[in-house]
Image (tube, rainbow, N blue to C red):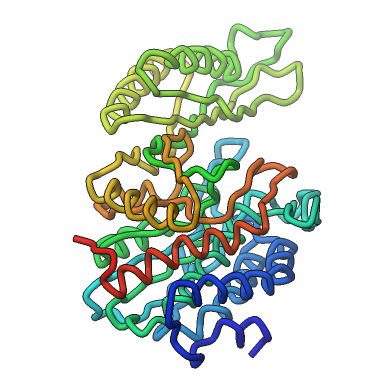
Length: 418
């Protein structure tokens, strides 16, 4: 057992007061700096399954002392569209699921992802200190710092004399950054057997938290035309790039037609030699939705555009992908959970502000399955998905205390749920 594992392991005396919890979290968090740097330096890009599994193993080692069951779950391959329109698959790392006291009266889900957006070939691979309290590195905020926040909060719960009143389930998934398509069934399962959910995505740079979230969908269009000599008989060709350009403009014009719906043309590929009429092009785009009805509207518009394009002689269009995360609407349960966390924050001197965001995460999936949740209880940080990603190291203890207050209050009955 490592020094960190010994620090977190159960078997120590139960906490006598909230003050004892705060002191312990401060001490434990300060010892996790090297652990966080090691996690950041371990590449776990979504398509680096070995790196994702290594990250999962490292975090599992910290959590195993608390858990009754630990599972490593193999997921289906990720299927995507290549530059020639071919469909291919890529393996993913394993999901890790831990459960404790599944028969307790209150069941709580805690989650976070193991993957980052930084591929193994990306130049951003190592953490560094920008100051004593600011750490820059891949995944320090999104979401490896958050997974350590979760670990500290659970360690505090497991030293509560009232811990038997709460059962918990942890899921660390390998594919959140690419839409959680493979792990979505695991999230739905978790939503069906838990009363509330806590996700450890990073808080906003000012410490605020997300309320409502937009939904998201990723779409791939494959446009097949007809090759011909660009000089001798171009009229016999059917230019796939030209049609893709028309479709791109038509899709872009959908922006602004419904409040809050946005469509981003993110990727296109096609053609080859300049003396050949290109016979194939690929167009990929992302859609963000504000209300569930947006999905039906977008599908209707897309079907209309594709039907018209397919009616043109010599062309064939294929569509792949779709909506993967519905909008997260703040339910009564989620509002109640936000209120409880707001109370916990005030006790710690934090004025937590909840506000909507265009980003989405696994909290969307949980909400769609009916589970009340708050989904950015991780560290305070910013510039995620870039080589400027940073986190405030002192927020590791700060946010662990926040979640621990909630868990301990629900365990001892000083805070109620349901």
